[in-house]
Image (cartoon, rainbow, N blue to C red; front, side):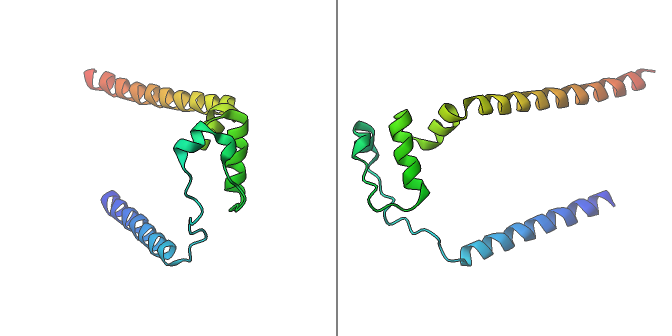
Length: 119
C-alpha cells in the first residue's frame, strides 16, 4: 500500500510539473529583453554612466539605486549582503538550527533502536 501511494504521489507531482511547464511555455512573454543589454565591464568602471532613459520598470530603478548606494555590480549580492545582512544571518541561523535539531532527533531514534536490539 505504501509503495502504491508513493508511485501515485510521484505521478501527480510529475504530471503537475509537466502541465505547469507546458502552460508557462505557451504564455506570452511579459518582457522581451530588448533593452536589457548592459555592458557590465563599462558599468563597473563608471556606474554613473548607466543610461536609464528607456527604463523597463522597476528593474532599471533598482540597478541605478544599487549602483549609487553600494557600488556593487551584482544587484542580488548587494541586496542580500548590504540591505538585508541581518535577515540573511537570521535565516542561516534558523537553517543551521533546523539541521542540527533534525540530526539530534534522527540520532536519538537510531540510538534507541540499537538499545532495543541489544536487550
